[in-house]
Length: 389
Image (cartoon, rainbow, N blue to C red; front, side, top):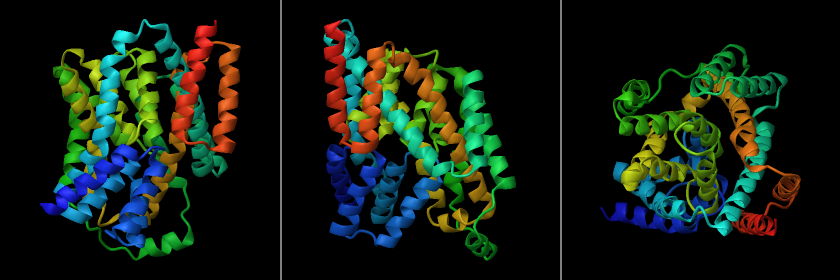
């Protein structure tokens, strides 16, 4: 039990100070748990990072969960999740439940407009960076383009699921793994899989859409659980998945405010679900925020529990590597479509807005300032530009 408390307090401290998104979180973890505390060897930590990139879900939170799991078992993994997520949860819940009452104030509308412009810059930056990583061949770039076209023309969740599935099938059929990968894979004879968490993951993924109509709470859990099950490529990809799922249930301005707030605070970006859950259940906002947050994180943690001992076998299997290749390419298309709808068309309404976005994109690409500095700057720009008109 002492180890569980140690895990909790270490991750709580990191949850209060870890600005900068998933890549920065992994750096904080490396310094704290590999260099300073020596909870895990560098090679083993690198393998955890590889696993988080291989599976859907919130990458840095999955690594944190696995670190807690290695340190103190299942309770340690849960303690790591609660500690790292709690500060972000509290802050974004307060934002969700207090900004509605201030929505008519001009100063707040200006700040929100600036943060929406920041969302355009950040999503454009994420799309370009992911394109460079995942679309190195003409075929993978074509997958990304076709995915974006399909979602823009037929914008619904089933389109997203279909294109991800088709991309995975194409990857299995066409992607050629490296010779080294094939050699290793040919020697694999068994996988050490924890079947129970995988079974729970599959059952919930299939069953939750079938029972979503039974109540608002079931619909809430289903929407966030299925979004969490399909998020490949990092926290930004949760944006198009949740936007398509909740398009008719939540105002676009509120959605983008939650997205901008999730970037501005320390901890995982998946706490966007906290904001949306509170907004969707105004009569019981705390329970709505809790249920949405648990639902969006749960799939990734179930997969970590089931596969963390066999990830190397899975990653070097040619068919699975091909499926991941195809899905990653499709994810770029998902993000590209979200860059236009809802992000760009909801934020950029004038030539001045476009000029601000262009400058911001140059700054984030070439100067790479801290995200907190960007948040403050865009909030101030939005306030000044709105109140100057």
